[in-house]
Length: 255
Image 1 (cartoon, one colour):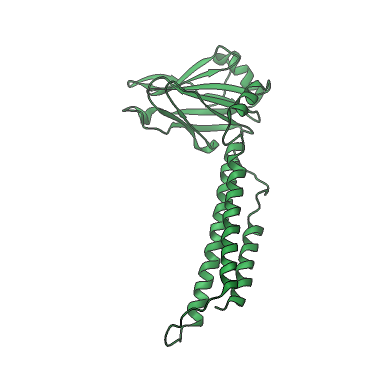
Image 2 (cartoon, rainbow, N blue to C red; image 1 turned 180 degrees about the vertical axis):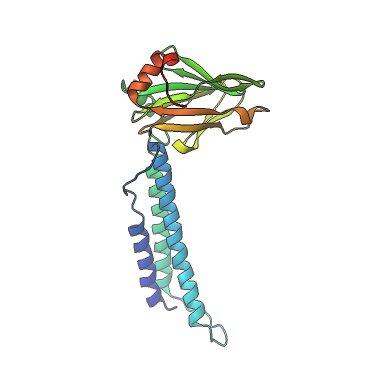
């Protein structure tokens, strides 16, 4: 394919990439602000990869078809325009990937800095819960109350069956820690995952949780009872959450 023909094809491919992948596209159906960031980034990168794949494969098919009857291969001539074009195209693609990734990773609801955590915990309208991993169950301590609940199994004995309760449409800080070995707090439907380490406290900050029931796992092998280290997360309206942390025995938060 001659350079003059390839240039508009490459330009058109980049234009399709930019038009098809809109970082500011409206979102719907997400269970949390964190999940929205993760899935939007994934969609952007998949769309970019599909566009590039179709472009490259299209050029390959065209080349094979055009020169299908050639008796022998001819040496490629130097074409500066072509070389500049694919260099610029590659730079644009890498820039797009870098900007998209930075847009997601720099958001405090995906990767929170110490200042982000302090600001979230200082917000009077926010909610903070400490989640402690223990072989092989979870302890939940709700800030601003004396409520401490457990869920899971320890040494083949059910320690507790209480869910982690979080408020919907509220900024939430989850502090993870461990009492013994390395655990990992993982709620895939909410896009939340954080290691729980002995002697160290890690933080997750999220928002816009949708009401519903979600599965909580330990995502780090932590011993013989690892598979039993399960719990439910119930996301409820703020009034129900406030009532629950004040009187958990008499407030129903879901099945």
